[in-house]
Length: 193
Length: 180
Image (cartoon, rainbow over all chains, first blue to last red; front, side):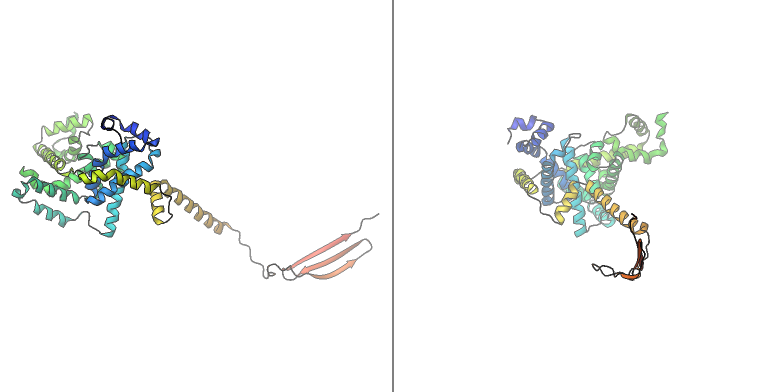
């Protein structure tokens, strides 16, 4: 395992090159650098701790096995996130087949609106977080993924488009749809602030 | 004037672009147009305020951190998965699924091979010349039955007429001696 200064200073490109040459400790530094963010993205898409952990680890393993094919045109994290987001979305689809949950369930949205109708309840930060998390869980997986990559990872539309293999316009419309839906669900709370 | 591109009646277009504006992803020209509209439209300004509030809530609520115990074991589990992925492949449905996941072009290659096979098979059926089958065929491996119908001989040549009744063929065999 690399020393702490090496972990902080060595850039991704060099670590990728060293990994390609067979230095597994270089890849370990990449893992430790991105494991939190990868888990977070997977968790926001899957909304399940164990599944998110498994998918994040699987994404790193697949990245390592196919690192020779990584050409370095985009950043390492963009490439990793592409693997991760694909895996997570595949998982939600597979889960949907076994345990189907309607993606756009108006009744569920109404229930969430009612839950957030009490301003006193929303004063509690913890409660608010739970409500937002529930509202985000209502979104389709691709909108959740776009929203997480934008709001949590702060990626540009172009980076999100590369990760999700779509156009910038599609990213914009997914984010717009996600925010509109969240505003519908949490709207009265936002107005109350 | 460009600022007039977003007039009062264009609030729906502005609202659609507010997200990109907040994210700093609009081109400079569009940004100027949108800001000009916002300076003149309270409704869209209120919408922008709601969007910013929502963004702050999302950012404050969605970020989760990896629990310490899982973070400590994370690399070990990744290594285990790497080892598993590098193990000799066991051919089965899962292996095929994984292979196609890794190499999406395989879908196209497989589709192309399948399509070509179907095309060749169909073309062979359609284009094959239709030859009427013989009325009777000798059994496989058995030489055709031959009947000598006539033999005519002269001083310098002879003609033998054969026939194969099974295949409805007649053979005329002409032998000619060399004249000295």
